[in-house]
Structures are given as C-alpha cells and as structure tokens.
Amino acid sequence: MASVKRYFSLSAVVIALDLYTKHLIEKAYQFGEKHEITAFFDLVRYHNEGSAFGFLNDAGGWQKWFFVAISVLAIVVISYLIKKHKSEKLFCWGLALVLGGAIGNLYDRITLGYVVDFLNFHYETWYWPAFNVADSAISAGVVLLLLDSFKKPSHKGQ
Image 1: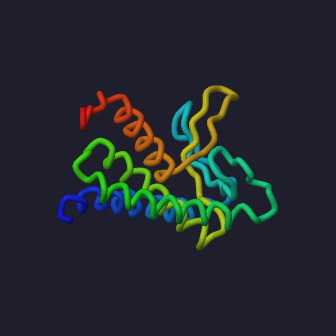
Image 2 (image 1 turned 90 degrees about the horizontal axis):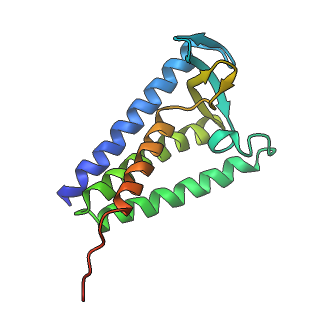
C-alpha cells in the first residue's frame, strides 16, 4: 500500500493548492472583478455553476447535484484504478492529478454551490474561459493519461 501513497500525496497537494488559491481570490476580489497582470493574462473572480467552459451554467440548479454525483463516482473509480494499477506510473500520476482536481472542484461545488475560477488568458478580444488550479491539474492529468495510452501495449498471454 505504501506505493500508492505518492499518488494520493500528489492529489492532496493539488487539493491544498487549489483551495488555498481560491481562498486568496475570494478574499481579494469581488465577483466579476479582474486585475490585468499582463497583456494576455488577468486574475479574475468568476463563479462556474456548470462544468468545463461553463456548460450548463444556467441550467437552474439541478446541475449542482448532477456534477456532485458524477464527481463522487469519478473519485471512487479513480481511487480504485490507482490502487489496482499502482505499478503503472504514468497512468497513476495522471489519475492522481485528475483526482486532486476533481476533489478541489467538488469541495467548492458542495460548500459554495459553484466553482471559483480565476485564471483568465486572452488575446486581444478573444478570451479563454477562466479556470483554476483544479482545472489545470485535471487537464495535465488527462495529457498524461493520453501519453500513457500511446505506450506500446504488452502482449501478455501470447
């Protein structure tokens, strides 16, 4: 069991960084407020009641519990997969990042009813949807999972 500790430790670091940075933004900014950092990056405070890119953001409230249920299911499945495949490092590092991000956003969704987003990149008048540390970890984890999927499969039993 000691070998899975490193993966769950990474998830814990993601959760801590995510919650801490969201806390700082909530203390420093009002909803909708933004501060230009560079010509292409702003710190903002937005609330996302939906999923990625604000999908279902205005669905009337039912989406909160839908995304809570999906997140809880994902957390259980990901935890199981990490324990089952603990020797597959790239796969488990990817899962650990996704797990940490999922828990960070789940915490917001349960305690606040929305997810706090604050990183906002843009080019001239084109804006990427705001995101947070949890979203970044999920994205990085998915990249690792994709890289892992391209590894040469072993031909066990042949």
